[in-house]
Amino acid sequence: MITKLLIAMGIGAAAVAAVPQISNLVQNDASQGAQVTAPLATPAITTPETPRIVPLTKGDAIASYAPVVRSASGAVVNVYARSVQRGRVAVDPFWGAMRLPDRASLSQGSGVIVRDDGIIVTNNHVVQGATEMVVVLGDRREFPASVVLTDPRTDLAVLRINTGGQRLNALSFADTTNAQVGDQVLAIGNPFGVGQTVTSGIISALARTDVGITDYSFFIQTDASINPGNSGGALVDMSGKLVGINTAIFSGSGSSAGVGFAIPAEMVRRVVEGAVSVGRVVRTWSGIRGQTVDSEMAATMNLARPGGVLVTEVYPNSAAAQAGLRRGDVIVSLGGSEVNDESGLRYLAATKAPNEAVVFEFYRGGRKLDGRGILSVPPGRGGADSRVIEGKNSFGGLSVATLNPALADEKGLDPFSHGVVVTAVAPNSAAQQSGFQIGDLIVEINGDAIENIEALNTKLAREERGQVTIKRGDRPITAVLDL
Image (cartoon, rainbow, N blue to C red; front, side):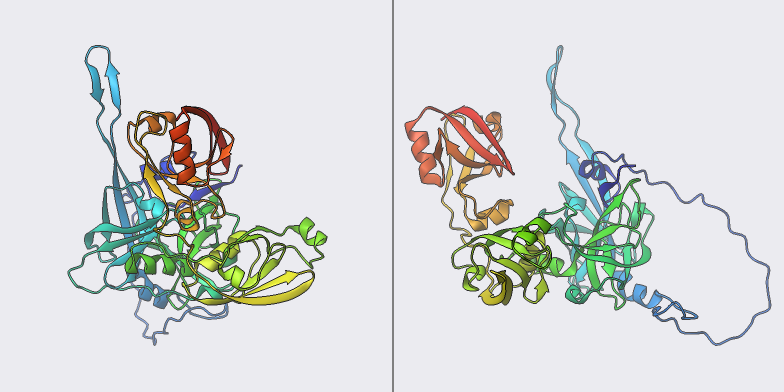
């Protein structure tokens, strides 16, 4: 059986869109269950009630997670998202062009109240494309929800509900830097739409970076049962604090196989703080380009073991530059946390606050060194040269900008790349018909590098046709277009 990575999202069409190979899940009516008969009456026995405590060892005679559930479950909600797919235009031989009816779909997931004034976190894939959202609290009250921010790069979304000034139960964030493998956790959500459900397990692994779900792939793994409908729900520790947002599972069947993944609370906190304070995600960066050190590289560089990040480029004036890093160094720690790979380094930097001082530990020529730098957001925000291209040539209808690190972070591109990035494509324009997409990076025309708007303007003014090379993700595409 082929194991698949499933987004543990809600029930409905959105689930199919997120994971095309998985069939739609049907919510069955559970009202026709087995009948329960009353037991025969027995004499009452009066005994003192033993207080419930969080289980510490298997030897506890009477143990219960109830105190944790009572404190945390009220902050976990159901999220219902309605989306409408516009009907396509069809051409009938008798009636001519006609628009087919719109199609509405409903998906369902979970969410977590993280501020008592109505701020809720869920997964981006739960609400992506939604035109209407409703949040249902644990006491069955319903509220329309609005989007404060969506961040596809972390698969997180921040919602807001208006409770008329009434304060809500909210979960506080756990310090996941202190989490350990083996810690007990509870997963709270609405699997398969059956209603709020609590499952228990442990933290099975930390810092899973090879899952491949988001750009900032750094997950807490748990064996607590997580199923479709749990997406956006809470993973809490034994103090009732939020450890992570349940997001995905590995499964060969579409349901829990004991391998679930949650976005750590440190990343969730950064996204929420940015959404509430400035309406966008504020992500700091280390300022290096690098690659993970594998066993072959470790042997070549006389390192004791694989792991760490080999520096291949350092951005001027960045935290890494301030710390004295240079090409060929191997970073093994940032801010006191171990760095095992490139994804881990990116995550550790992104969960720090702007202007926070951190210490890099690294190897250079067999010696272990350290240096201090001040983390900042990627430079260039709001300062990129931009242009809207008009006309009937193949570029007509494009909005473009010179790529800089800030714009690269926003679009999920390499911040060390050079070129002109497509920021918008006008509907029904020549550029759309030519196949341009948002995020395309124009890097070359007729063999000449296009590093900025000025270079692109020169080519469009002087030449009528050319061989254009763009980068779409990691894939170069070349086409001959009218200029």
